Image (tube, rainbow, N blue to C red; front, side, top):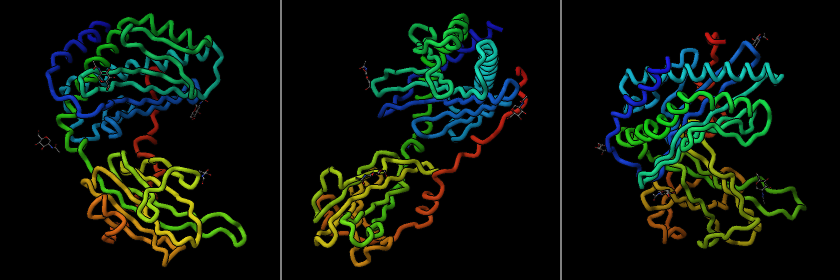
Length: 361
Ligand SMILES: *[C@@H]1O[C@H](CO)[C@@H](O)[C@H](O)[C@H]1NC(C)=O
Ligand SMILES: *[C@@H]1O[C@H](CO)[C@@H](O)[C@H](O)[C@H]1NC(C)=O
Ligand SMILES: *[C@@H]1O[C@H](CO)[C@@H](O)[C@H](O)[C@H]1NC(C)=O
Ligand SMILES: *[C@@H]1O[C@H](CO)[C@@H](O)[C@H](O)[C@H]1NC(C)=O
């Protein structure tokens, strides 16, 4: 059993050519969650992400890899993907047995949740960083250090120390993991950068609305809160600013942002709010800058004529400099806006797949 494991990665090494490195640092990450309901029932779910793009999922009743992008099969032959599936299946089975044995020995109560984050990050200069971290019940459990080939832990409890000791006993796993992280993972990123270039270059334009939140009750001195809701953009980096009479509002208690949040369709959204003095006679606008806009900005003035409704005004300026002066108002897809707001809480379907009857259990 050990020999094929050793030979497997060596065969994969033959694939290493010199495909392109990414223009920005790019991470390939496998996230694997195992839920131990009790000593006889376990659920697993796995997913692979290139940056924020989901590329593979793993249905672990059989550990079959699902390819979620047309180019996700690139880099390995069908036989090598199959070998990888078998390897993952074997390692996960061993890990599950280990956790159950330790839980029984140490009297650890169920349920137990373990999470793995395994992968590598490739930099434009060709260097890479590797990681393999496991957590248990939300805390650090063990990590694999690819340089030393050893499992390490920052935790001092008996269960964790025992797990580390047992994991370090298995040199074959260590050598295989080192190879998978140093070579296979990095080669896969290069291959995906080459074949998935269109997906990686995907651009989705933001849609934005500005509205005022309902006025505070009479007699309260609170300022009016203007809200700029920006959604449907990809990739993630975005810059949203408020303009008062054409001048950018500086940060302070009057500004607030939700931070960038994911939508279910792999676009992002953000909400920025600005507290303003009611009736002070200033003009306000929300300015959005994003790579999809080709150097222009989206400028959405606050329509004071309809102060309390969700006044929609979506515009694109002719240039960043002229933002305050010229805005072309257009109506944009409301469907996309609506669906992306509604869908933020939904889990991808494969994540709810339950796994039964694991043969080693
Ligand atoms: C273990 O957990 C599963 C899922 O929650 C449940 O269906 C099963 O009855 C449990 N078995 C035992 C022995 O408690
Ligand atoms: C390559 O780039 C990364 C990230 O920018 C940096 O941390 C690393 O030190 C660089 N390595 C070399 C050899 O220049
Ligand atoms: C992706 O790569 C193909 C082939 O190398 C090339 O023809 C195409 O223009 C590239 N697309 C993008 C968006 O870079
Ligand atoms: C900013 O937003 C957070 C979260 O919505 C809220 O708790 C906080 O009070 C807000 N701060 C201001 C100054 O409005």
